[in-house]
Amino acid sequence: MDRTVDICRIFDSVSERWVLVDDKGKVLFASKHLEKFQDIIFPPVRVGASLFDSIPGSWQTLAQNVLATLHHSKAPSILETSYVHSDGKEIHFEIKCTAIRNHEEVVHQIFIEARDVTPQKIFEKKITIVAREYQSVIENANAVIIGTDARGYITEWNEMARQVTGFNKNESYIQKLSDFFSPESQESFSVAMQRVLNGDVVTNYEMMIRAKDRRRLTLLINATPRTSATNEVIGTLFIGQDITELSDYRNSLERKVSERTKELKSALENEKKLLEVKDRFVSMASHEFRSPISYIFRNISAMKEHIETLKPADVRERLSKIQSQAEHLSSLLEDVLTIGKTGATNTRIKANLKMVDLREFFLRIIDEVRSNTQNTHRIDLDFQNESLQIESDENLLRNIFVNLLTNAIKFSPGQDCVNLSVCVCDRLVECRVRDQGLGIGETDLPRIFEPFHRGDNVQKIKGTGLGLPIVKKAVETLGGEVEVESIEGKGTLFTVKLNLNHS
Image (cartoon, rainbow, N blue to C red):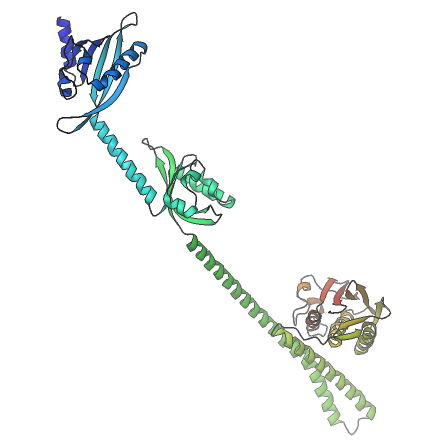
């Protein structure tokens, strides 16, 4: 009996409420603290009485089920319930029922303890309220908020994210955030994601994603790591704004700045080229115009001083040379004026089209060029047709082939022949002028059609550098093409392609 009293004193020193009953529910011992449950346990629990006589009727069935379960299970049975105290406060408590078995594993006693968990429930309730408020803030925030787990799968997708992208929560959840990125944006996003998972905060990151309607969106995002209670990174949180319009406007400005920069650079390059052309023109004019003018001036002065003693044959010879130099000046001036008509405004000369007998035309041009070059070279004509009529401008044709044949002869010192071949290919006439002369250097070849440009290997040969630019302008005016092939020291081939007719 003394031992039983000692056990009761020990249990009474514990603040928890407890009851020890036999396998039928008869009370063997009871805590003195059970009076705190007087609002729901009546009559009070008494040793020797049945516990079922004191518990509310609504608990009877549950209590019988718990008792039956404990006979078949070794695990304790735990219940949670609550009631309103007489002072109006809601009390939450946890009831734990543990079966005590004898050496034959038969239940002969049941220990029932009740623990007040009201503070814990109040805390859980507060946590739940805070969580709901937090979720409400996320859902209704005036910013795109997207959360992911550590693997990149979406766990948060607020209303603003839906409005901006067009995807609702059901369409976005359980997908990887990277699935919303274009292929070219995957790598940069992967780098940013890894930084956040390593614990870094990424600010002002421009995230490029696609909308439901396939539009490309730009979001300005701050990304922060989400951590567990043990400070382990378990995911990421992206918060930002849609800056697609601003980004497009910025890109538009950048393009305009780039375009204006290119235009300015082009204008500066053109200005530089114009200065170079001016310098070449001054150099050419000072040489090409000065020589014949000086020659004419000297011969006229000599004739004036010796007019009484000069024989008629000498006068005719001098006048013939003066005339030749004057014609040369006229030709130079005509070349300059021709380039001036097109070069300043980059416009074409107007073509006066009519039918031209091409064979007869080339025979006249060959005779004219040979005469102008003092018959130093033979011009072999390979004309495959007996007669060929072409719709073209005879003056422009003359500019083209007088220049090409004259250049072929002029830049073929030590040679005695140049070739002109003409053939019809489909609706085109291909005219080829070939020489075996000095050729054109590899660095000069791309610039041969620039006004006043002359190759390094022909500086000692007279010329203005205007012949080939005139050829190109004339060919373009006729709607044709001119091509050149050349090897320095072995000769040059010019191919002019002209339309048979313009209808």
